[in-house]
Image 1 (cartoon, helix red, strand yellow):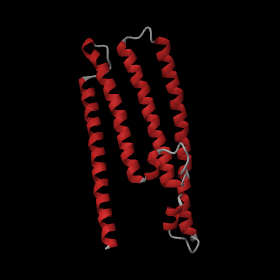
Image 2 (cartoon, rainbow, N blue to C red):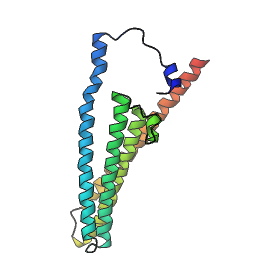
Image 3 (cartoon, rainbow, N blue to C red):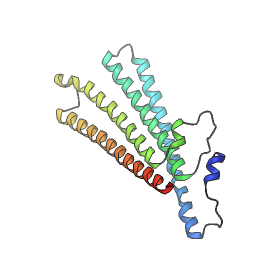
Image 4 (cartoon, rainbow, N blue to C red):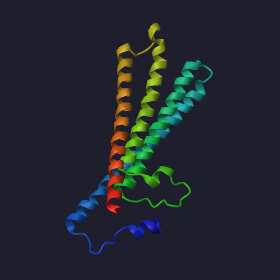
Length: 194
């Protein structure tokens, strides 16, 4: 934490009581959850390497469409992994404890201004990205719908599109509510200063 931020923080004059200490300490119960997500990310790394190896060994036999679908699968794994990183790093920093990465050359740019609201918007955008990849993959695979070589039905494709649209509308709603609350906070700060 920088010296300017530390100087603005109020200094504690008395220790926490047992109940507040228990409640505040309960945030550490989330630590196993974040460790579990790290394990899940390791599994995604294995999946990525497996998919990449499959693409590499069968590239000569694949059609352009099959290669495109395999690459979309790789992109999907990367986007889910990015989502995991945002949840692990941002969630830990926001809800458990500071990581104290200030000045570290690899500190993520977004981490310096992350809070629960920013994290929700970033997660919503990541989910939309993942949903977009799945929808694009569905549209490509559904191209074979007329030949009967696909597992997709018209109703299934329609529902995927509707769900994707709901994700987009939800993200817009979250961003709008966040903007309204930021405007209200800014107005309250200005009123307090005058």
